[in-house]
Image 1 (cartoon, rainbow, N blue to C red):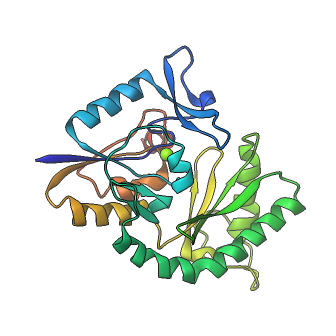
Image 2 (cartoon, rainbow, N blue to C red):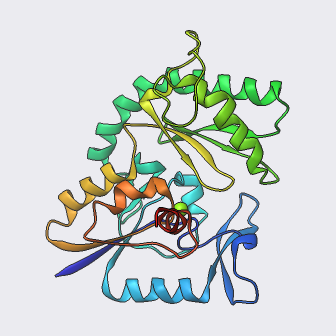
Length: 261
Ligand SMILES: [Mg+2]
């Protein structure tokens, strides 16, 4: 029986230099727009990938968009799931048009809300002088999700956006105590939040790595053993779609399990 590995990338297969264990072998794995390496694989991550490649179909499952995925220098040769499941690439690098036909109408319908959310977040950042970069991620011309990062990785600034601004946009308090909702603010109930280190994303619920993983399994790999590998709490739904799941020790997910004990 074939084996399929659905593999998250950032903080699972590679990570930025400050997150690499000191004094261990490491190899550049992803690059910034200027061509400088900004993420690295340890020797163990290299070996793990080699092992997967020898015996399984390896399918990256990432929040990266096409541009950022192309800056990953790991020779994947199967399908790839990008943009929190917004885009599925075929092995030749072209988009899976059936999947795109499902996502595009929903992305276009959410576009107005995404732009309003971005504007509202940017106003809060400017008013509070937080210095966080917030942008709307597009792919194949579709507006997909909002990502916020601090240039100096000030996670407190992201925590403030989440606690003081985003919580006020959600009527049902999924993350924090919300004051009465401002009727002119966009409603966040149709979105989920992903936060891990210096990355806070607002993602519409029609996205989700798990939907794309389910689609790929159904369309391309009907009878396989599936292994999901991921590090973040937001990876859990796609990991649950798989027969087996793995996580890096020390990851957000592993720490959450530890905290539950
Ligand atoms: Mg990750």
